[in-house]
Amino acid sequence: MKKVMNNERLTTTAQRAINGFSILVAIVLGVKFNISVGIIYLILNYTLNIARRLWDLNNVIRNMNRIFGDARDMTTILQLKPEVAEASGAKKLIARRGGICFNDVVFGHKDVEQALFNNLSLKIKPGEKIGLVGPSGGGKTTLTKLLLRFMDVQAGTITIDGQDIAGVTQQSLRSAIAYVPQEPLMFHRSLMDNIRYGQLDASDEAVVACAKQANAHSFIVELPDGYDTLVGERGTKLSGGQRQRIAIARAMLKNAPLLVLDEATSALDSESEVLIQDALWKLMKDRTAIVIAHRLSTIQKMDRIVVLDEGTIVEQGSHKELLARNGAYAKLWQHQSGGFVE
Image 1 (cartoon, one colour):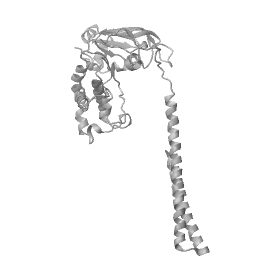
Image 2 (spheres, rainbow, N blue to C red; image 1 turned 120 degrees about the horizontal axis):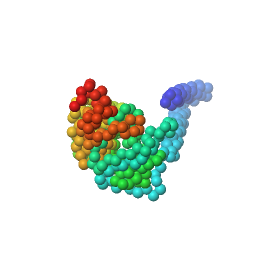
Image 3 (tube, rainbow, N blue to C red; image 1 turned 30 degrees about the vertical axis):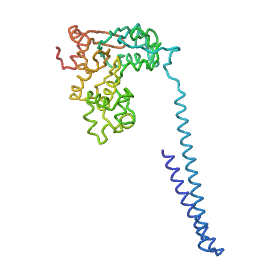
Image 4 (cartoon, rainbow, N blue to C red; image 1 turned 180 degrees about the vertical axis):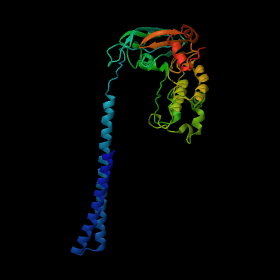
């Protein structure tokens, strides 16, 4: 940016210098050769016009250099190969019931010698709501990334309705899963377009309806441009809670059979969280859902709660069952509730 500004300053200075030099030459010629004022004006006019065209050409060349530079950067990006390759002859995933199975999964990050998951197995029934809890770094988010095939398992399999996700197209896999991450992805487009990204052919009315369910409509209509408001790069013009509500509205609009919520309400204040809890339960109805939460109050009504610690399932059961065992989950609950145990 500084280089461009410096070039523009140099161009302006040089143009002024040429204009001044042209005027000086015209005056000298007029005095020395006794040229009439009309001829001097004509010479000066032609000189300035030629100078103007030369500087226009200079601007074109400078813009072309900038475009070629951008094209070079874009070409570099397009030539990058994805870390997770599509399987040869991959088929379209057909997710009807939404049963998920992690079968003896082994996975470890490249920069860590010890594997995070060693033969981890977890079966999630169709329509079951699972809460994933545990200390930070326990593998909760990694497990969902493996399900979405942002990364591949090193051994074992992950299946959806009996279909190994390694053998299906990534597009069909991710179309079957509505994913709300902790840091929602926002595009520098309008709020309407950001929500509609969940279903590109959705009507404006459907977008607004989902925004209302996600408790986003109220703050959107207060903005000067309403649903036409541009959110800025990565949603910088919105607060964290507002971005999460937009992401939840997008997931509602997608209407996928599988749902993954990774700390989807972490940036919401208590009042907003209460308002959208009912909407989230409506969203999860008749769907298989995996919900990651550090705030345990958000997952206590789940069908099953799975406690992960250092890549190992240390406990699983309902909220009441886990409290009765007085194990890892009960300690987490007591810590968050100030010692109160139901």
